[in-house]
Image (cartoon, rainbow, N blue to C red; front, side, top):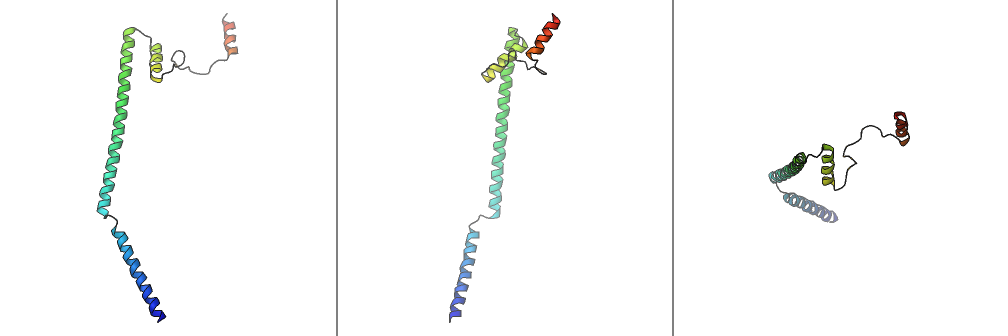
Length: 122
């Protein structure tokens, strides 16, 4: 008698677990719908990436336009190129660049070496 009860409980558990597994797999959308959803997501990502690239191009174009306007104003006013670079750099960054707007090349001389050159020239 005890074996019959245990056997029926075991069969009942197997049936319930099999029915539960079928119901959980039925909740997933079909493969075709998953593929369509994935393709839609990929398409949206591609569109967003293209929009960002377009915005970057517009910003670069705007910057080029501003630089061209500045150059034409400077050319009309007769401003030297080093001074013009200084003014445009200051306008863009909101702070003044180095003294002439030109980067120095090579090593800087120490004060002692510069003084030695002055003595030799004199």
